[in-house]
Image 1 (tube, rainbow, N blue to C red):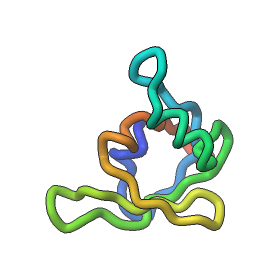
Image 2: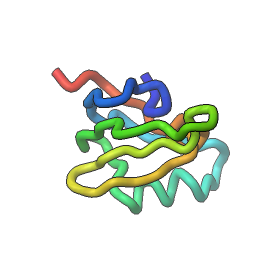
Image 3: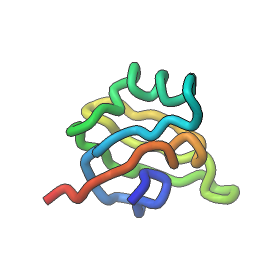
Image 4: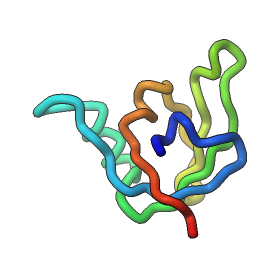
Length: 79
């Protein structure tokens, strides 16, 4: 499941971040911000218009992401 599809309030663990193209600056920035494999993530909120942007928590930090940015983050179950 990708981060953009995680239901509100649910938790998961980041499996990997998928780049779009050879030099994807958004993927590089996500990795710099801490969206790294093994990191727990929680969907905090969805925006009011088309559920965009979304708010997620990684560790103790909240981030606002566009849905297409979150679609680069692949998750695995929290179990």
